[in-house]
Image (cartoon, rainbow, N blue to C red):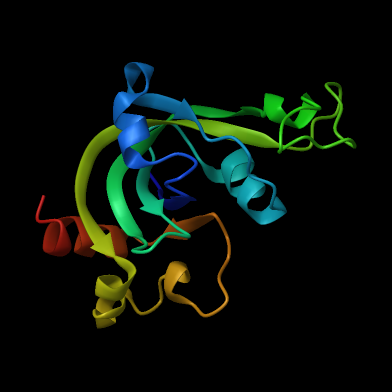
Amino acid sequence: MRYWLMKSEPEEFSIDDLVAAPKQSTAWIGVRNYQARNFMRDQMQLGDGVFFYHSSCPEPGIAGLAEVSAPAYPDATQFDKKSPYHDPKATRETPRWVHVDVKLVRKTRLVSLAELREHQELADMRVLARGNRLSITPIEPGEWKFITQKLMKL
């Protein structure tokens, strides 16, 4: 099992949207970064743990827990000319972009970016690195355990 932090802008899709989604599940569409795509395509597996992270908002942070509920498959938005995620170089025969599905495990209290920064145990988290813009990053098992057991107290 692996662990991931997946960022979403709450104005676009929030943890509350996931709570309200049919079967509390959603396709993680719109990723247009090759490294993040490769994580989904090559490493994510069913049941992997996910920190659902609110980004680009007044108080960024982990807003809930989810799990990978479907392995990578082509992101249909790349083919939709009306979509903001359209990619004119992608074809159905050779799609460039994939996504996984994620399913809610539980909404949690917000563990803010500022709070994450307070703990030396989390100093190596990619989300805390200067200039990190990746929408999906791996989480080390020790980081997952520290956050879920010490900060979220699950």
